[in-house]
Image (tube, rainbow, N blue to C red; front, side, top):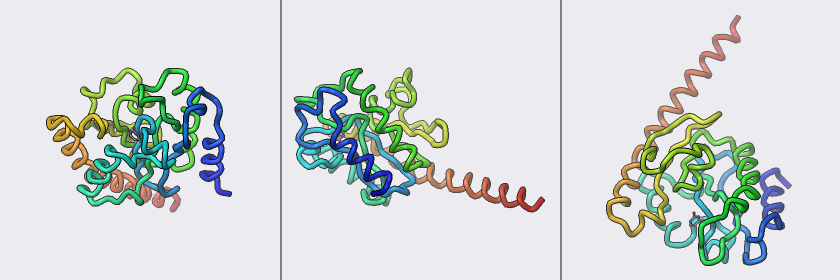
Length: 199
Ligand code: URA
């Protein structure tokens, strides 16, 4: 079993917080192990809990549309959440639930090593920029460790709010350029490394 699959097994059997008692399925995440982009939401909702897959309800359909609008397919990107089990009634995740679950997200980041992490909403933003306000920093890429973090609004929050929807759609449109810039940087680093190895 690969590293990612065994992590999924661990998550499916997890009993570290109270949410395991009410879940139908844990929702580890999905996508290619070598994905360049990782999208991180908040927590599974009703449909995700039923299917064991992230973003398969209304917010997920909207996310699929947003991805399609920039020429990306869901199968090409990695999608997961800060917490892996549904909070009852879709309430906000509690601090101790986030603390119990965050090591799983950290291991996903270590295994997948994305170049770009798109945080969807305030919970995933808080993982990387704890004191940032989503309305202030959204749409602004920032380097965090080995990747670029790009905070955007949560699709569920923007779905029925025309103004936020427009903002989220605009923020998504900047993703291809961010990826292009990352490609250029990588090429530069590679040629620098090649030059260095000549000596
Ligand atoms: N909202 C989230 O944050 N994650 C999901 O998987 C679905 C809805």
